Amino acid sequence: MKTARQLMTVAWLAFSGHAMADGLAIADFSIQPGETKTIAVELNNTGNEYIAFEFYMSLPEGVSIAKNESSKLMAELNSGRINGHKLKVRQMADGSYYFFCYSESNANITGTSGEILSVTVTATETAEPATGLTGILSGQVMSDTDREEWNFEDLTFHVDIGSREGYCPHGYLTGDVNMDRNITISDITEIVKIIRTGEGTEQVLCPKGCLLADVNSDGEITNTDVTMLVKMILDNP
Image (cartoon, rainbow, N blue to C red):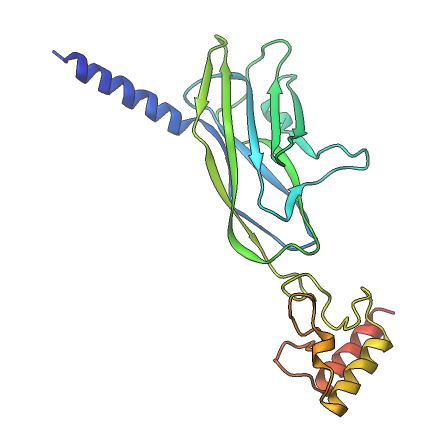
């Protein structure tokens, strides 16, 4: 016969197993500065049937949920897993995002695993390249068919911000030595002057110290950089 302590242990393990099996999750993802992409929020509900859920999403600095032309946050429920459910999303004062999915008829969410909603995220043009940045899903609460609430632990996911092609690691356009956001003959003239005189290198650094005149990233300012800039201008008239 099991003792009271053993029964309590079995009950705790059963609950722990349930908490680990069910819940929301986001896979790690990468994004480039200036890029907009869609990520999936998955719901695993093999342990129970749910009719509603809520949670908060926190994204690393430089990454946010994109807005459409109506300034509405871009998030959408997966039509294959809902039964007339609705989704509300709003940004909180601390920068996190609150999600609330519900059914006015208390209908069950369909299926037991997979994508429940998609979220469109965007990175700023000057987002700092970094790996292993942390995002958080917190305050996860599920409501089942008996209207019992289930709370789940916070989960983290990782975000990598890469260097945008043609830009320095800090988001400034390589070759745009006068930083007017365009590559023109003025930039070529400035680079040629530096090559001829060997002076003025400090004038072609981005605010973070990257050498914008070093177009091919070999650590030097040479005629090769000039040739590449000319090609860039001709290819993008």
